[in-house]
Amino acid sequence: MLQNIKNKLNNIQIKLEKFNKVYIEYLLCTTFLNLIILKINQIVFQISSLYLYLIIISISILFINQRFILTNKIKNTYVFKIGSYIIS
Image (cartoon, rainbow, N blue to C red; front, top):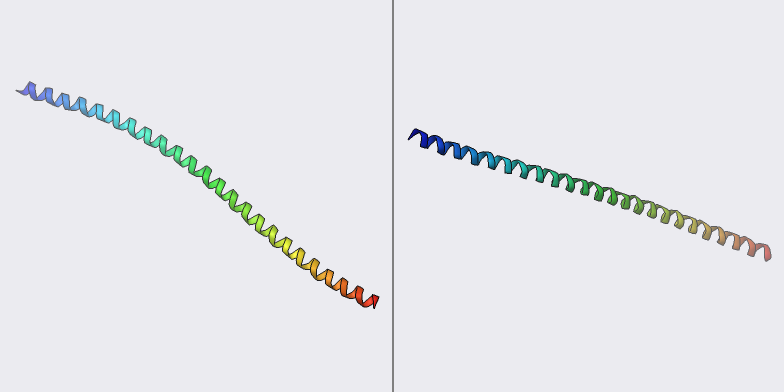
């Protein structure tokens, strides 16, 4: 009777050891996958921040160009008016 209980406990212990081994392998795999996903997220974030910087730079260049176009229009009208006064 006692030997039978001992055998059952031993079988349970063996099953638990197998389960623990499988569970540890599962944890290692999920940890590895999480690290891969984290690295992918970092790369995506770096790319998106690079695009954000490019957008900001292009918008600032656009505003600078608009200011130059506006100042050139103002200068051209003043030059035209001064030239027309000199001619007349």
